[in-house]
Structure formats: C-alpha cells, structure tokens
Length: 272
Image 1: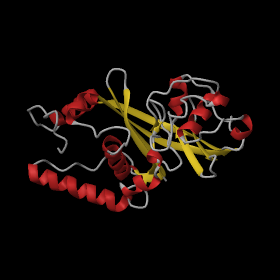
Image 2 (image 1 turned 90 degrees about the vertical axis):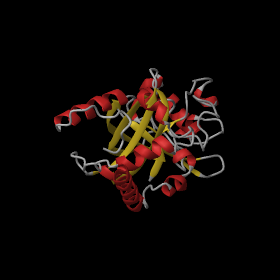
Image 3 (image 1 turned 180 degrees about the horizontal axis):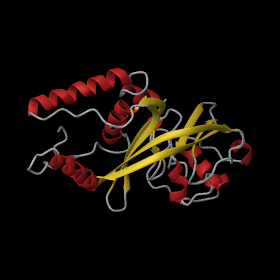
C-alpha cells in the first residue's frame, strides 16, 4: 500500500490532547498528510495526501512494474539523446522493502517532500520511483526546481520489524514508527503514520503523537481515552540514510576521477 509520508508542515502543540490534540484540526486533514509534521512521515487513511488512488496512479503498488520500466526507458532515451552514459545498475541489494523517501531543504532542513509505500518493493525500482514521486508529486509542495538542488538533503528509510500491538501505548518514542487505523466520526476507515524519528524530533510523548496522527488522518471530533483504545496500532522500525547534495556531488566526483576522467563532473549532469 502506498502512502504519503512525513505528515504536515510544522505542527504546533496547542490545547490538551483530549480537546483536539497536537497540531489542531487543520494540521493533518486528509489531503495534506504525508511524512509527519516537518520531519517524518504520516498519511491519512487514503494515504498519500489522503488518496491511495493518487499514488497508485503515479505508479505505486499495482503499477510499479510498468511505471519503473517506463521510467527506465525514458532515462535511457535521454541519455542517448544527450550523449550521456546510461545509469549503471546499483551495486546494493535489490531485495524488496517498504520504503519512504524524504526531501528536506536549507540549513534548518525544512520538509520539501516525502512519499513512500508500505508494500515491499525491489529497491532498485522502488527508490527510483519514490525519489521522483516525493520530489515532484507531493501535493503539499510545488515540484522541486533545479535551483533548489544545492540546498537539498535526501533521506531513505527502509521499514522493518512490523508488529501489531494490542495497546496503543506499546511502542517507544524514537525507536518505533507507528501506523494507526481508526474509524472517523463518519464511520470511514482512516490510516496515518509517522516514521520513528518524528515524535522524538518534535518532543512529543505517546499521547501527543497519537493525537497528532488522528488529526492528520482527518479525525475532527474530541479525542477521548476511550476512543484511543479503539485504535489499531502497528509499530515498526526503520533503517535510515541521509545524504546532502554536496555529499552527493563529492561522491560522484570521486568516482568520476577514479574512472580516469580528468575533467570535473558537471554539477547538474543527472544522466551520467
């Protein structure tokens, strides 16, 4: 299942959790949910910005095979057109994992895009697909531009160790990501998620995190302890790696010279 990722832009904790919870009703309504406040992940039940079909329509699960093939063909066509060497097959594993790709920008690392999937995807095609989708198709932001590249940071989170738990408090802040399922006041099933780092970076406790997710998932009624107990919660962990654009260029430049090419790698050459 595909999902939007990091949640909403900067959430502010205001009011008691039971009276609306962190972020307020406007901080996580369906249609804006992704990675989790300004940092991690989350999505409303209809996932990517509240609409599973939107992500599937972009080549998410169910269509990833043809989408990845089409993307690969387009890249090879561009390489041929401009005289670049086509991308080499990655050396890392191609095992399937659920994954999220998060983009941040600037010194304060503001969220710039984040989308992923809970369906295991082969890494080579999954990373190619969701790197572009999170950069260009996150509905909360305009598509990334070339001018933004030098200020970008890209993080990849591979999700592991999924466990269904009976108690909505049975998870550890800073260790587990959480995905909740619940029924809203209209009886519709909703889902929302935060990656493991979100609650810790925001300084939230268990209740604040749960209530923020409920609001992000579109729940507008008062949040009571009895209602929290109806939540179905899945906890998981993630393996995360982050690279800045400067680090990426230095890495590429290093390999460029290692391959015996004496001139510098053009900074915006994305095809060689």
